[in-house]
Image (cartoon, rainbow, N blue to C red):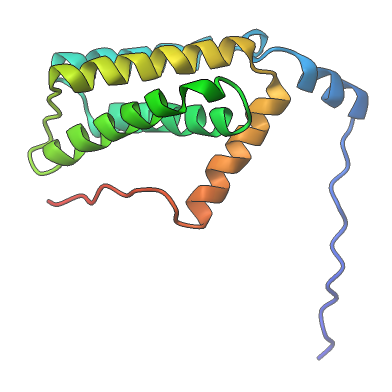
Length: 154
């Protein structure tokens, strides 16, 4: 039997110029509104005490991207507020894991709301290329298992 070759051709961009020009556009022009609506609906459900695990996952994803963008220099001066928002969400979700009800304390709600405001402001000034770099950071952290995990107990 013949040994398999390690050669794998690299994928080719059909239109490299369009890819570069799209990377320079602000993310707000790329149809991010649907994602922002999901995020804000999830925050509203969490505020009302009616959040599901899917709503929590939307907020966690937004906060992970928010942290990655701050590492890239977008709103880097808000690192303490970002950490506070992530800690508040982690604490609230961990408290509600067994029951499936996620109830916030007032300080946690304020921190999470501030975190979402920071994320919205970051999205307004971020380009598509920067957002792709942030997503790469999030995926890298996930692959290296550096994220805090909330254990499901059923």
